[in-house]
Image 1 (spheres, rainbow, N blue to C red):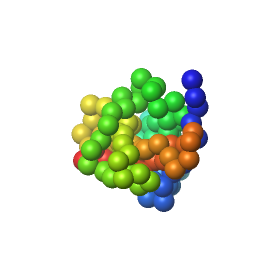
Image 2: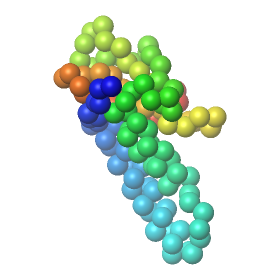
Image 3: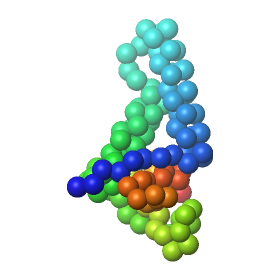
Length: 116
C-alpha cells in the first residue's frame, strides 16, 4: 500500500490554524476555571487532526471517502475531488475536501469546512 504525503492549500491551512487557536484558547480557559470536560472546539480540532493523519491512506475506512462533484480540481480539468468525514451524525458536521496531486504520491487538502 502506498503512503501519500498530505499538503494543505492556503485556505485549508488557515482553517486548521483557526481551529487550533480556538482549541488552545478553550483549553486555557478550561484549565483556568478548573473544568475537566473538553470543549467542542478542542474536540473538533482533535477530529480534524486525526482525519488529516488518516489521509496518508485515503482508503482508510474511518474517512468514509467519496467523490464530490461540486468542487473543481485545482490541478487537472477532469480530475476528481473527494470528500472525507471529520464528523458524522452531527449538525453542521465538518468535512475535508481533497484531491490527488499536484505530484505523484501527494494529496492536497482543498478545504476543511462544515458540511455544505
